[in-house]
Length: 424
Image 1 (cartoon, rainbow, N blue to C red):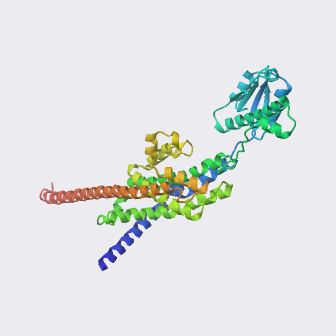
Image 2: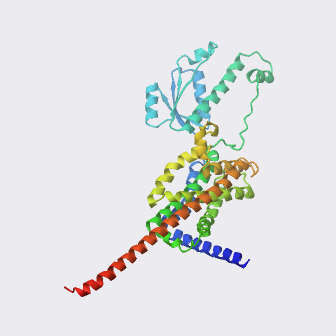
Image 3: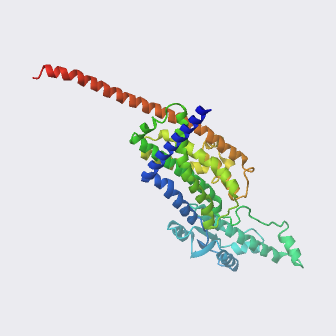
């Protein structure tokens, strides 16, 4: 029993020693501090500020009215009265409107043909042509929905003028036989910020962790600092102490950063937040552990400090798409979904979106919750294998250098007597 307690005591001491070494190196390294502290604090503020308006308003459009009739002018006035679109220019032809789009003065064009009103009076279907700049989907959505709503409202008035009804109820039944009431859930404003920000916040936590851990690993290799870990790993159990000690350092820092990003940022900017503290802690605990061990495992690929920047920047956008928040999960090919299951942010983003924006519980995200714990366990043992290999390599290099020094000493000792006998 005393031997067991002594082993536990030594393990805790070794783990605290590794924690102290990693914390000291983190504080001394300005690059790691930037990715661990500055970026998680500032980046979410920038994203939240950009998406704070949720939806775009007063999108400038140009109008080409070849009809010049009361009906076309009514359509234009109603369109200009919507909060989403602003009629900024009236053009004589499409060539002028195309020039405005090329100079980014407007983001769309509405074209009314010369027979617009006559077609309506003949009882035929008239057309309003809409041309949109597809460089930004939000402006396209605003223009198209605004024009659609105006056309539906005018269609109703045209139908009423042709009906022989006596009561308002008759008019309502004839113009709208099927009543539709739109009630947006989970995203009441229909805004882009509420939809995308939860995923961005979770992805920022993972990517900054990968950057900081990779930068620290690249610095350690450049300075050959892994030799400091060799005395601690006296046997195989020492690997667990090293991994847990370093992970404890990262976890202590990111427990604060995660609370700030997931609780404070939505509160500051008024985004939808239905999460409970217990559910959030239950999700973030395995998520942070999975990200930490994932980053420590990938650190074996980092030979220089600059390498991790290219790796993380290249993978950030694909990781966001594969999570299913920016592109429908059902539309992602099977092999890409298989790759996404290897990344902690996939399940972290899906789980956080459901408990934060949809008011779910840990039971509702049981699949994502269990997947994160499985990832944390798998990446922990993978990290242990990677670190064991690194320490074996460090020991081998140390032994080779020691043997080389001994060989030089033996050669020097043999050469000294020979020089003494032959002073010339």
